[in-house]
Length: 106
Picture (tube, rainbow, N blue to C red):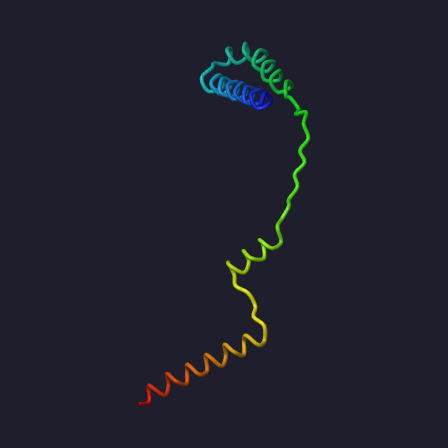
C-alpha cells in the first residue's frame, strides 16, 4: 500500500512540475526562462531519477471448472443433438407441418 502512495506522490509532483514548466514557457520572458532553466531542469531530473521500482512478484494462475464452462456454453449457445434426437424432432416437425397443411386445405 505504501508503494501506491509513493507512486501517487511522485506522479503528483511530476504533474506539478510539468504544469509549472508549461506556465513558465507560456508566460515567461526570455530572461525569466534563462534564469529558471537550471532550477526547473534540476527539479524535473530529480523527480525522474527518484523513480522507484517495485519489490514484489506477482503469480497469477487461471483455473477453470470444465463442467461449469460446458454448462455455460450450452446455456448460452445451445448444443448439438444426437442423431436419434434429430430424427424424433424431424418426425415431430414433419407431422405437425402435415397437420397444419391438412387443416388449411379444409
